Length: 74
Image 1 (cartoon, rainbow, N blue to C red):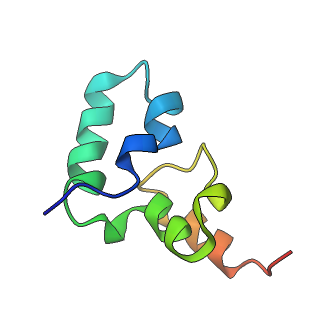
Image 2: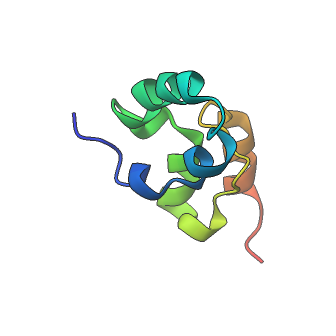
Image 3: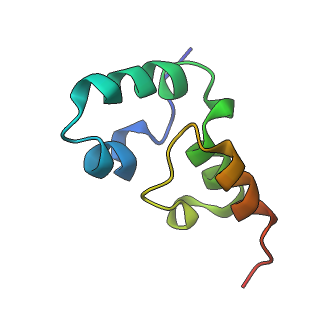
């Protein structure tokens, strides 16, 4: 499977995970280099676009992504 289309410019990895390369690689293998449909960041990106994805949203935080997607549009 191909890498996620967002991986190259993902602010999560560029910002939040910059000082934790081993943990970043684990997240990338699970959420970015496999089936990214389980990635909370990708869920929000698909529906609301890149600008709506909080920088501090972790790939495994599906509950938060669901709340973001359920919130009324502003």
